[in-house]
Image (cartoon, rainbow, N blue to C red; front, side, top):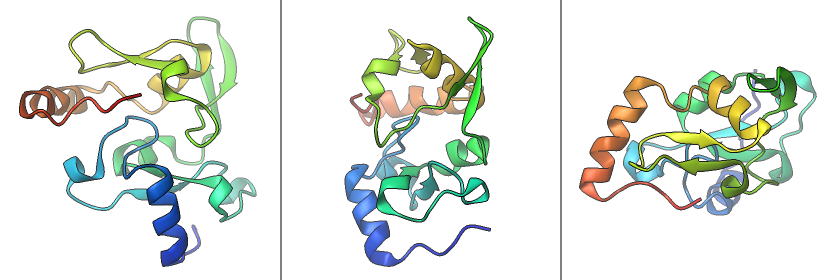
Amino acid sequence: MNPKIPPELRRQVSQDAQYRCGYCRTSQRVVGGPMVVDHLIPVSRGGPTTRENLWLACRRCNEFKGARTEAVDEQTGEAVKLFNPRTQSWSVHFAWSSDGTEIIGLTAIGRATVLALRLNNPEIVAARALWLHAGWHPADG
């Protein structure tokens, strides 16, 4: 069970994340509801409820991440840590496809995170196409 996030801490983390998911980069304004405050190291694995261990995630990414901290990179077969949006640069590990609807993993961490969090599932890819048409996407990396 996740502890309640104090409102001031939620505000700080939201500002740090620029009100968008640290994994898929979806803006909170596009989702139409508040983002989830994600424990980068889950509480179930001893992660604290501190600003340094928290970031925003959309509900979809948060649900697929669950209590994971690592996943397998299919290219190398190695287990690697999942992308940490607080300490790592999105653009180092990911890029947008030429049409802007899919996230491409550039590194082992990026590839493993794309698969583990299902960042390119058909529903979100279709939604991104609509967001692109409306001029709401993609967010910068």
